[in-house]
Image (cartoon, rainbow, N blue to C red):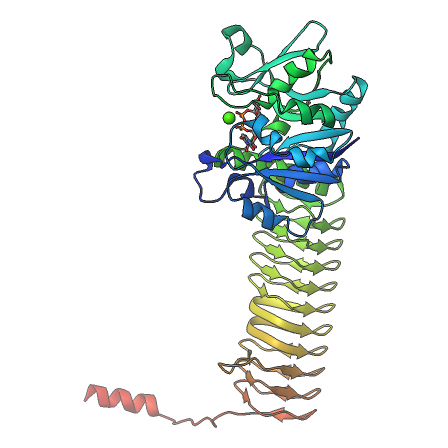
Length: 461
Ligand code: UD1
Ligand code: CA
C-alpha cells in the first residue's frame, strides 16, 4: 500500500497560452491539480507532495488548509527525474511505496491506481509503470519490453529509433516505485539525451541493473491517462468528467433529458425521480430532493431544495433553501439567504435576497423582496418592492401572516405590516400597519368628463 504520493506539476503549461499556470486552470469548477490529489488520497496516500515551479504560491494557497499536502519547489524545470530528486526530503520520510502522478493528468481513477498497485505488489515491487495502448503514440515515451513482458526501457519520442516509434504501448507518466530505491535512483540519473533533461524514466535502467524486474499495468481506457496540454484537451477532459458524473446521477434514479448539455458538479446530490432539462448548471454542493423538476437553462449553486420543487426555465438560485412543493420562475432570481417554506410560489421576474417566505405565500410577478420576513399565506402583488436600502444601510421589512399586498406597492423599510392587513394597490407604505387594517396611500382620482373631446376641438380650431 502506497502511503505517499508525488505529483509532478512544475511545468508552466505554455500551450495553455495563459497567464495562469496550467494545473490551476478550472476543470468542472476545480483546479486541475485537485483531481490527481483526490485520486491518490482515495487510494490511501496519507502524505502527498506536489512538485511545483511556476506560480508555486497559487498552488500552495489552494491547499493551504490541507496538512497532508507538502509543497516542493523545483525552481528550474530540468526534467521529470530532476523534479522527483527535488523531493528528496519528502522521500526520506517515506517507507514502502510511492505513487508518482502528473498534475496535468486529471482523469486518472482510484480503480486504475489500485490495479497498478496490485501489479506492483505481485511483482517484487521496485518500479511498476502504468501504460496505455494508444492509436497514435506520437510524443509519448514508448515502453520497450522483453518477451516475458518485463520493461527494458522507456524511450522518449526524440530519442527513439524508427522501430521503437512503432510501439504503441506508451508511458502514462504514472508509476508506483519503492521509496528507498527511488530516493537513491533519482540521484544517479543523468541528462545525456536529446532534450538534455533528467528523465525519470531512467529509473527503469537503474532498477534492472540492480537485478529488479519492472512490470506494467495497462489502463483499460487510454483516455484516462490523457494529459491536458491545451484548452482543446481541457474541454475533452471536462466532457469525460461530466459524463462520469452524469452517468452516476442517472444510475441513481435521476432523469437527465440530455446529459451532453447538463452540467452537474461533483458533490451535488440529487434525489430519485427528479428530472433535469438541458443546459442546466447545478453545483457548489447543492442538494436536491426527490421528484423535482429543474427546467432548462437554470443555474443552481450552493442550494438545498427539498422534494417536488419545480424550478422553471431561466431561473438562477444561489445559496438559498427551498422547501417542498415550491415553484420558482420562469426567470426568477433567488439570491443568497433566501428561504422559501413549503408551497411557496415565486413567479417570473421576481428577485429575492435574505428573504424568508412562510408556507403558502406567493409573489407571482415582477417583484423585489430583500431583507424581509414574510409570514404564511401572504399574497405579494405584481410590482411590489421592499425598499430595503436608504443609500447607507439595509433595513428590514416584516409582513405578517395572511397579509394581502396589492399591485405596485412600495414598502419603505424598516416597516412592519400586521397580520391579515390589506395594502391597497399603488400604496407606498412608510409607517407600520396595524393588524387587520387597510393601508392606502393614493392621490384621489379625478375624472374630467368630456375633456378629451374638448381638447380635440381646440386642436382643430
Ligand atoms: C513524460 C515522460 C513520457 C510520458 C509522458 C506522459 C519522461 C522523461 N517522459 O514526457 O515517457 O509518455 O510524460 O505524459 O518522464 N514536470 C516537472 N518538472 C520538470 C519536468 C516536468 O514537474 O522538470 C512535470 C510537468 O509539469 C508534467 C509532468 O512532469 O506535469 C510531465 O512532464 P512533461 O514535460 O509533460 O513530460 P513529457 O515530456 O510529456
Ligand atoms: Ca518534456
